[in-house]
Image (cartoon, rainbow, N blue to C red; front, side):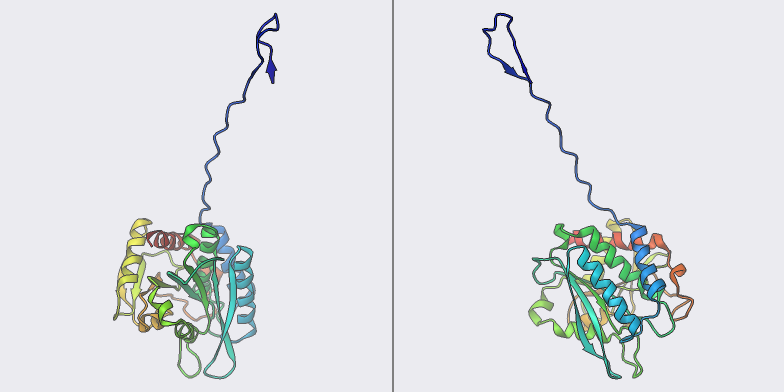
Length: 282
């Protein structure tokens, strides 16, 4: 707007400028308990049991791929053979433009036959999917790889962690050497103090980082040697610093009663906060 400063009309017009607006600070996304719960409901509720190579497992992989892609990640399925014949798949996702992974976070997508796998392990996969949303497009997404592993549960010949073993072997030595921490997010649906687990031999780097991340997030836990119980094991055996994020024994383990109701929603958020703190440490 222009205003005449002199009645005689001899003064130059001056410009009255509107006050500059201070940009509103951008609030980073927060971990959503409701969104994580919705993933548990999709996997353990709508899809249900997801044994390796089954139709339920294939539907679960499609769900995970679609969720990653909707967030802007590059996601792909990688097939591997099952010891009893047939095949299953791992699903890996990374942010476009990312180089080799510095951090690898994984959780198994399969279940035993007859169990919906609410806590074992829709809880872990749900946390990974919601964490992917929180860090999408941020520096934390660069150098991060998220993997939903197949065939973690024991197969008819007794083998387990088949998918994560295949995935660890598929990484060249240079890639494996560049991973600062691999964390298996498995059965984190109980309202308890966290267990930061490790194989019990080899590097303790990842489990110590995970413990520090728990302290940073205000979610304390205890370090425990847990042995070969989850998808951290093949990576630890391959020389990658690897750890397990876990909330301990599950009374409904491998039972039909391991349903959506078996998962504490608040613990999903607390697990996500620990993993986000881990990414911020590295």
